[in-house]
Length: 117
Image (cartoon, rainbow, N blue to C red):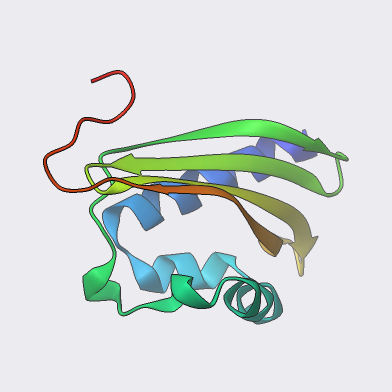
């Protein structure tokens, strides 16, 4: 049951991120996790206006435990693809991202086709 609840939270977070709803995204990520991610990936913290549009996303189980599941989220759009692993933990009764890792990032030049195109 816990893993299903965490997955629902991961799906909600991915949908909010894809829609550009920063306020909703920040509610689900612990500040420490966001700070660690930004320190490990300094180029990832550009202004929201520079974030490319997301056309589709997927959420897959990537292991962890039932109490601390990990979900792999892939965002794709015309500008490229980003793959992140998010570790979730219940904090004060709510599922929160406690660790966020960039697994892969691929940029596409404008006018080039992506995989499957």
